[in-house]
Image (cartoon, rainbow, N blue to C red; front, side):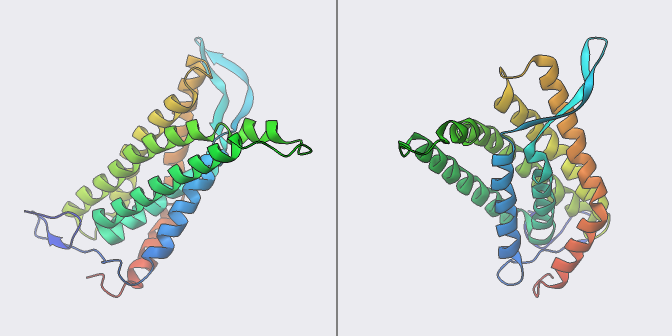
Length: 239
């Protein structure tokens, strides 16, 4: 049996390499991965729009609808690519589940703080509730989309690497993103904002979010290449 999360020889006869994560930079990448996820969950509570109202055949093309999570969340997929490419599926899965756990903890803490009685002379309870009181639904949406998207992203990358080995890194990065981001974006947008924004606007939100995240991956592809190369070079047991 071919174990996709360990060094192995695929059906092509090519040696598939991964680092163990016992030494090197796995912990730093994991910390950044979880931090960007948490920041994005809070940022996603604000919807943002760009451009005037414009419809084409009844479909709202403009304004472009996105959310504050769009600034950093695509970077979690880049870190996810690094984790799966360098450390394999098992270590990527560990990072995904760690992010899942800390996101649940953050949501619970926000719920407790929001429910706690404010000080008599503290005037910002309504502002707190309006922003962070909405986070639990955002976190639920994020977690459902995140689990589906990140697992599919890691799985697709490792599957492609089993065939290409060290070659065709661009195919692994883009192929995994196209699969993972589609599931993530569709699930997140629907769970987070269905019933809050109208159907046409929701579809706009999903399409724009998906295209934007894939575009970010494409734009950052040269940087991702360099980061992956750097991480591999600093993993003593990347064999």
